[in-house]
Image: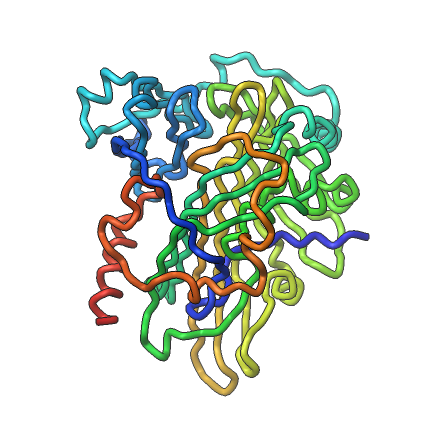
Length: 419
């Protein structure tokens, strides 16, 4: 029986974040394309929308406010940009449209109408579909090693108040998907910064699984020992849901639920599988919280003696992007909500930790990739190598996930308070 351990986010909450030596970033002259993406039907902002340069590996995602900022060269921008999201028709903007609309552009997305598209009906069972998709991973995903540039953000909230923010640009090396093994996959810090509350009552030394190595451990398709291992499918029931559209391509949607009681927590979620290629394009799942002890043992690595840790919610989102007949890792998000209190104290505090990483660029890489001595290790501490300052032009030519208005406001309050 194989235990499923999907690594999440936070290193040492407010104390230690995993890290490695800083490598000088390469600066490239770029142009900023920024805007907001909205649903045309209800005018609401759309979160986690893919925004990319047409025909290239360059891209980003929108934040919770629907805002994006994409930094590209003049040569790249001549190709235009493509905006895509689950359940919506793609929007393609030419360079002429981008120049006409300026940097404050609004991108309106139209929800797809399923009745207007031909839907393939899968003849087998939902589980058989998942098994077939697993069998085609070596064909559908990268058959060569790749080096990604990725942006990582990690936030910690106590109640609704932000008490910690960490950001980094990383190099992420991914070997080919032929053997679904992450032994050679590595993350390396390029540039980073952090800002944490100096209040003593905000300091809480809790270590959860994960950190900036998230692109390694939460690449569910590549990490064959986790959710998509054939032997683990016996512990789940599968249900075929209504199909959805992603990147103007129809997707099978298969939901899954625990069907067994094991010594560790299982998961509830949905697989999105491309109807034509049978590639996994989007995986949404959350930890089964029916047994809090099992959930705690899965995510909690260390806590102070006398501190009570009670998980409330652990959720994940992993998306992949198709390009030139292959599918590549695109975006990962992990949210953890939990309560902490000390014995003999009357009240507990609710904390929310969120990490997200977006792959903003990619190029084919040599087989040896990032050297082990230059990569993140489980014992490295982010604080030891990252300066604690927050300059407005810190990221310069890097593409990042734009901060929300609430996060920008929180950062300014933290800066003033820490002075």
